Image (cartoon, rainbow, N blue to C red; front, side):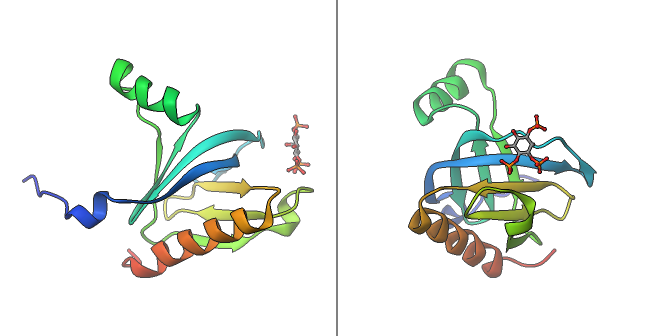
Length: 127
Ligand code: I3S
């Protein structure tokens, strides 16, 4: 049956642009391919939009195209210095075995994101 999600679950906690590279899908390694992504964090998921926020929103309305959505329940986040020559890279690993690298050249931006995502994960049940 349909359960109406609590308002808190729908609320955006943070959004902005970061560099993103998906490096595994369901445990299968992918070729790293960095691109700019519009990233929306809410209490239990992160959505990655390929385009700018404006384009993303109009695409959802026009085409129904959904962003890539990442379930944070049971996910892990850690700094990943060894995974890239870039500075300020962290990795999110989902229960389903998807792996994402996120990066910004600007120290405070990546720190804010790291802590926001870590706090979201820590508040969720682990499975
Ligand atoms: O970990 P890697 O393989 O050195 O990552 C680099 C490659 O993914 C490269 O693409 P090609 O596979 O087409 O060569 C990317 O352009 C680089 O950005 C990747 O390295 P960095 O250090 O930027 O994550």
